[in-house]
Image (cartoon, rainbow, N blue to C red; front, side, top):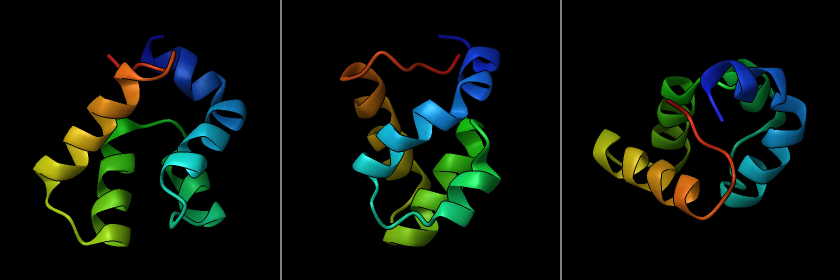
Length: 70
């Protein structure tokens, strides 16, 4: 799934993101709007992890789901 597809299907996709990262608020998910770099930043803020760790978590999430950013 490319970036445009993720952004276009964000309402469906954000439910899966919310399951994975439950500390992310609805407001945070609305701000992300399917942008990977925004998701990474919100994960860093909510969980107190490094950028590298946030990116690793996103990559792991992509491997285990049908949602991919390019």
